[in-house]
Length: 276
Ligand code: A2P
Image (cartoon, rainbow, N blue to C red; front, side, top):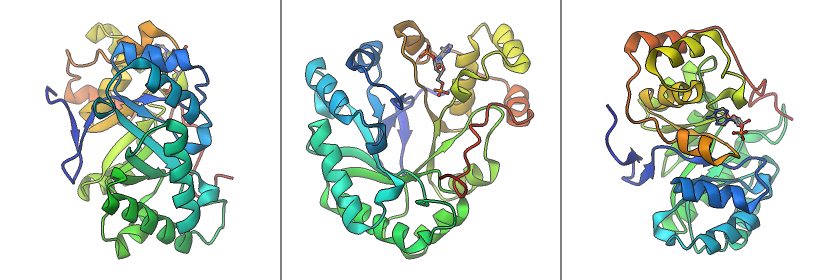
């Protein structure tokens, strides 16, 4: 049973077990509803173009800054030291905060075939600098495969603390998640519900019936039992709340493996080395 308050990163930083994904979220009300539902971990990105709106919601909600865990990301066209620094400044300005809890590189490559290594090296130096200065409490990456992580780790003073990946039943990226586990890198799951496409899958429906939990709760619990932090999105209060209500049951090991090994389902089709 998972009964701690949250996942703990290599540097001791603690973050809530479940975060709220904000890709395509444009309405302040959705953020306010998520905070009301109990989310304290909000995941955004420069690319989502919603940081100002989120900043307004944070101002309005009255929750002290120290109780929130805020993540943003630098987009793949902004790799390089100076551009990454400018992206960070723009993010904190729009969010109206003094610091970020976590800052991530969004993708390893600006476009397929790009000479990504020097760009990622320079961006990582910027993230390390921000971390050393205390402008961020944790640094990491998203959509980095082991070959990209190895490149960063080769010269890093601080190795990535987090890798945010597409992860859900039917798409578990075994090579990358195992690499992260072996190197103390916390994995976060984007689209943990496969953008909703998994919710009528026969195996998920079978397990939903067996455990008396919704298909979404089965998918989210599956993340936790793999030590992966899910970032579900929802626009509806009751589903936001249900997506946090995943701490009163355990999937049996046999069922975790069935979900791990089911045929590929719900994959976004996006591969980090082929994403334009
Ligand atoms: P909605 O906004 O109407 O709740 P993912 O996080 O994997 O990208 O999936 C997001 C999609 O899953 C959204 O379309 C969202 O729709 C839907 N969703 C989120 N939570 C639930 C839930 N508990 N039950 C059913 N659908 C959900």
